[in-house]
Length: 320
Image (tube, rainbow, N blue to C red; front, side, top):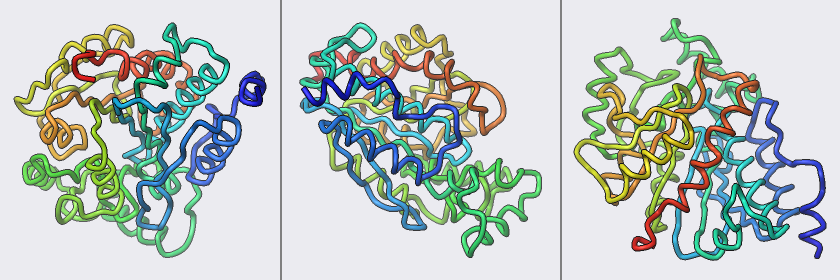
């Protein structure tokens, strides 16, 4: 009864009209766990600066899926996207209601949904002003000075060491290094520097280890911008991947495309597909220049809520 009563509280916990920081994320997760005690909050590791890489679990089912956001600092609007979905799911489950037409009891009993809403907390904090002094700020400013064409800090995508976390995975990493070096990203940079080796950064290591500790049947990696869904890595074609991609495109209105060669290696989605031969998707939400304005959030959420639901419901029962 307490959960049901709390679920009817009119005020939403997740704000969708403010810039996000790691401290705001921590407060939101605490509030969500207080209101909905069946939500499990965990930690997958820590960032360069020691910020926690929080995880959320919803559901107790055997079929595990994983969604992550804010690999890139100035793509932080993907963080409230996952949090809003988690709150809508929890609210519906607590009230015994459906979530976008699907029984939440079915979701909760059959799936374990894991979320990592902020893979790159240091970078997000830099972009949104929570790091505005000290040694790490000065380091980032020096790195940015080597790339004057990229605005600081709004153009920052990397972690605080100047390494692009979505170019850190052992799936064609050498190809990515060659491509990015040819583009001029040969040292720590606000974006597109692959690092000195794959899995050289604590954040990418944490995502890698978290994945290997589970049996995820499908992953979604959220980025901005372009309103496009990337679903392939090289010639890998996991069972159901194309069908689910078409479904995602249909319910969102997003284009379904093959990843461009210039950004087609060393990403988390690439490594997941290569390693597990299961469906993995990079989803680029919104349109415009990063960081996208919060005024786009309502459309972004509306476009993606059935993708977020479909990451569970579209899996073939034979694979569960």
